[in-house]
Length: 534
Ligand SMILES: *Cc1c(COP(=O)(O)O)cnc(C)c1O
Image 1 (cartoon, helix red, strand yellow):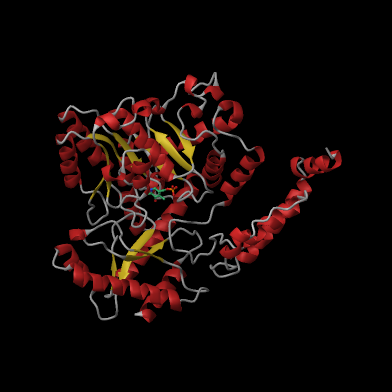
Image 2 (cartoon, protein in one colour):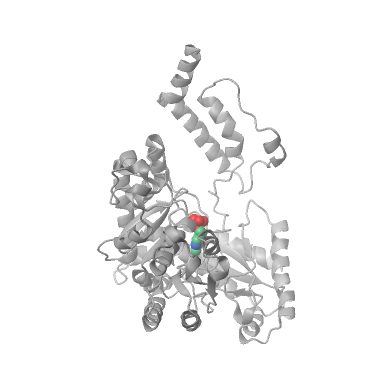
């Protein structure tokens, strides 16, 4: 072996050189600040054609600058989402406390599968899930949790517990002998629940979606009927996954109401109670206001905002009735990916996921209290979640979080008000307590509220509505073509907000207030651009 070449590799890639690393970090930061002066569009066009044709690998060992050069064009060609004009979706700029946590994590690179490979980083995971559990459940005795790579996987943990609760032994024997095993969500729930139904082997046909009411919340009457029907025909109901903050319109399901119906119906039919897992991937941040002093109002929120937050706190109380919750820190936690947490109210529920030490021979001597690999879906697991979450929670503090979230809700509410005043606009989620605004824009001269009233009353035919729907879409596309990327906010479009009166899917423009630097001038310009357009 050529020892000199080998030593070169070890020196350049396994010896920490603070000067070389800091220099590259400074260069990346300089590129980042240059980007912040540009409008929010891709700085560089994509080149998929040769990405596959030329997947080159260097021949000779180089240095850290080669590593930099290998990724730089792609780094530069990726939007950091820092512009206040980004209103498209549940996607924000990551906060820099999270960055500090992430860098610390990367330097140590713990593997959270077991205590042996993660030492105090595992302790940090326990600390952060407990902090989050206290926020969600308010007072709870024995919560536990785990970080996953996303809301999809966190929901899958909840679904999997449910399956094992009603089909004991399914982890070993599968679902075959048990007839139909079903799960229940709302029509406004995230599509990841379909993924889960498919991937757990339950089958997407067995995921039942309950219609929502105009506030995008699951209809309890229809839920009760469906549940009863399931039991009458002998189905095993494994789980119900209410949504706490739907992705498009921020509908919040009534978790307390669902819990009451669920337990009563299961008991009446002599069936085990299904697992109640709440998908709060987006909406969990409302829990930050549970301890806010609404009388003293120390942060001087306006009376309108206070009223909105009081409603939010009422919703958030529902979380206390959940058996488990999904919470995405990489959404309204303004954190880095991946940072989703799956949290159970009672640790004992994790027994439905557990494997014996015999089934995990790599981890002989493992202890479930410290070694999540005994019940986790993943084997190796990144430490980014706990590091970014604890750094963010304590960097910003409860008050910082309250200010950030309240500002998002305040701006969304202001835009809703402004849009509702235009005859040819209709806001479809006026009463939800989240950062998103879904609305329809018609040609000038139309009465948007009257059109919507007909939809709700059931006097609108699907054929007529299809023409209105295409007008909403056409105007959105016209704005996309004519907008000035330097001044005009970027919005997105949804073909179905999740509420389907008389079976009609409602299309809408969507604006989500997620960037802390977005302000009223962006709203003013948005309203002007709509008035100029129609
Ligand atoms: C985003 C989202 C998910 C999926 O979460 P990922 O982290 O993207 O996997 C699930 N549920 C809701 C309500 C969401 O908004």
